[in-house]
Length: 346
Image 1 (cartoon, rainbow, N blue to C red):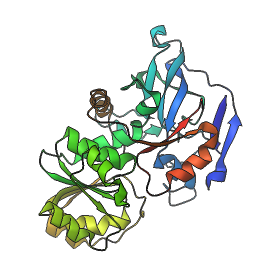
Image 2: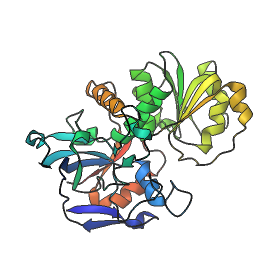
Image 3: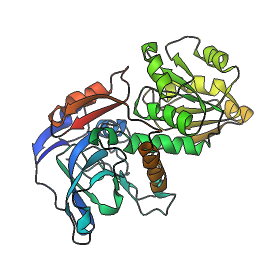
């Protein structure tokens, strides 16, 4: 089969199109013919070594074992099953839950042995992938491409909103609102949990699209008066911030949060380190959450909500598998709206 492998830490030249053997499913696994795989920050940061501060970097402290096939947002058709898997699963169209874990229900994502597809296992930048049968779920939509944009970004966004316990009528500020996680944060907070959303993006040409996704107000991070504008459109400080940017908007986020407000972060595309005056935290009684991925129950709840049409896929562009380098470069461009896809059959 054709697969795109990361051969070591570095730039996109570490991505190489290879011919490899089609994997064999183990006893409790299935073989999935990949139909679509969306791109996430996580496989780019894995390749760049951004998760570690030393020579090794990955979801696990031992680092990534190269070569590794990245890709975690995967949909496809089951074409072969292991000996302990029911034959009736063959032919099913599925979306893959993106990690394994021995954690108990509700804490799977924080177990020490959490292992991620595309980092600890070979992932979806390939024509075929093997995965545990119990972690394959029915697609929420009929389209492979549309169903592929939710797994990591959607689960992360869903878990973020659940962590801050959004209540109807509260105001939530969403940074990076045009990205994969951000655009889903906007939808989930507003259309599922009933919040008012202030979406922060770069180019205000995307304002109408953001409002279609559920944003009440849309502002640009390029403004030199962003804090004042946020407070003005809301009429008061905001209840919560859902952040994927990190350093670039951290100070602004703390400024506009109300006393007793909540700050939840799941990414740091705008800077991985920041300066923090602890007095801001304790004098404003701010609660901070670190967040990534979520639980299997949250994943199932999210898929049900998607199937009901309450959360919709947002896709910017699709690339054939062989163009993985170009797709990752494009992914890092500012101004895109929604997810970037790899389609092995194109």
